[in-house]
Image (tube, rainbow, N blue to C red; front, side):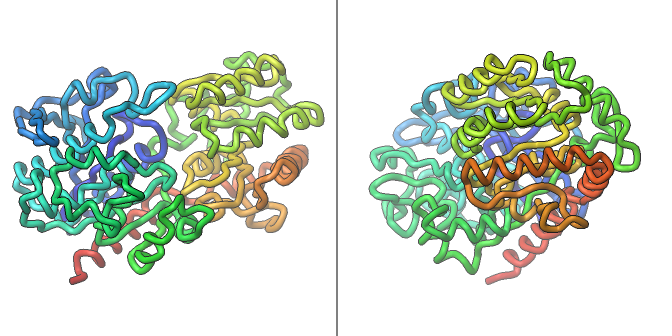
Length: 484
């Protein structure tokens, strides 16, 4: 079996801002389960140092050049079960309240921070002395790994043994920095070219990952097609189209030891497709905790999301008055993001007290309780590379209403179109009328308890665990290693 290195800027449960961390926390475990050896690398953020998961200092110290400076990287390691995780520690870069940004702006030194991180990972790979067959890098924060594996830390060359797989989790986040920052990389000036990482005079880290990888993946088949079009390519559609013969879409999975109402430690009652009684208790508990005044028989809508324009929050804002007027539904929303959208969601709770509850920030316990307590899960994303919350919702019997794009199109089948196979409700046009019509259909069907229970049980029995996806990644790794 192959020896794999995973390079990502976040891993659950150590530090997370969303789906990237969930994938990199679950996929390596699934790969080890089928026989692969996986070693992971991530920065040592304050959340890691202050978190409940034990880590230890390895004693390894590495000197890392970044432009005209040299910094020491202290290497720490996880002490739990599962794949080994090495943490790159440099406190002035990573001992911060947030991973990437302040409430109103990104950290000014993000380019320097993640250049240091990737160089430290490259140096650590050489120090460990255990050759990897594949280095699997994720998103722009690891986009230059292919270049450092080839050119070394100072651009003077390195004997590269590893093949590189690069995964795009969200093309909208590309890590674009001014070209005057290029000196931080210490790479040969020949790399600052339109064929590698140059992007209208800037450095584009995601483009570097795409152009230098042996194979590029993204997190659903539909999204892999969409990002090759001007509408969704975010300026890189031409680069991706040229790479189409080495571009794959593999849908994400979920970890059934974490997201599973039969074993979930965060919810008030366990339940299964064969016995849904516990879900009623979870709904009652969520209503009580969030101080809602709706009746247990009223439909309860749930959302757990990043509050960004991508997630369709403005679309929900447009239709929510009609939902509140036409139905007895309640709504619970948990999210973190822009101050403007936070103010919008808290405004809903003030306008409809007792029917809408909004909480800001990241609260893993509440996220689980919303999935377990909600009847209907809303996910009106403008675009969605894969999405994980719709998969969690299926598992918890919270029937999703989604915009039919990306991974949402690949995982949710409309009940209205396919009554005996559907697992949710979809809408095609990203408009108020289309979204509202889908919500109305969901609420109407909720009013038919027998049919609703059938849909819940069908949804909960679907297998979106990592097992199948891990096997697809394994086949891809074998293909990449076997290629010339």
